[in-house]
Image (tube, rainbow, N blue to C red; front, side):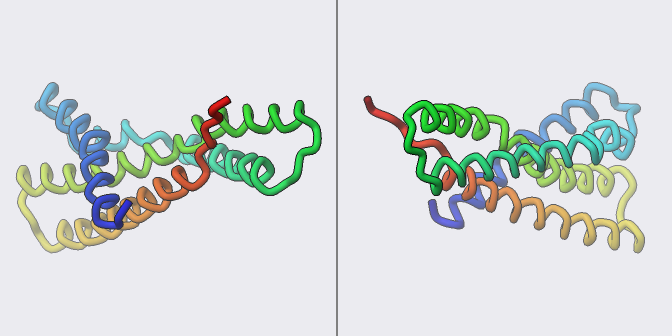
Length: 156
């Protein structure tokens, strides 16, 4: 997949995962504060660290399955099954990066619409934009890694 197509795809997914849920919450409760809503959506550091460990575990299982010779069929079948399973759960952290990349620009837009821009809001917006760009970069890396480490289809 080309980089431009990958970036466009990640932006669209980020909007669906991050922006739309925030807009739904804000519109269903007009008196809610955008910042408090964002805080409520934050999974917290222990959860993010856990998802990162799941990704590392998947990469470890993928490396064993791909690069280490397994002479017994039972061992090979075990690692193939573990690889398929770890691939399903290993990229859970990808959704967090997508949510960040979609939610923050939407929150900036909502806050700017509601309160306008002053000097401190502009600085926060620039810093938040850097976070969004970093999240989009990580989304692209994780998509590439997902495709690179996906289990091979067995035809027989």
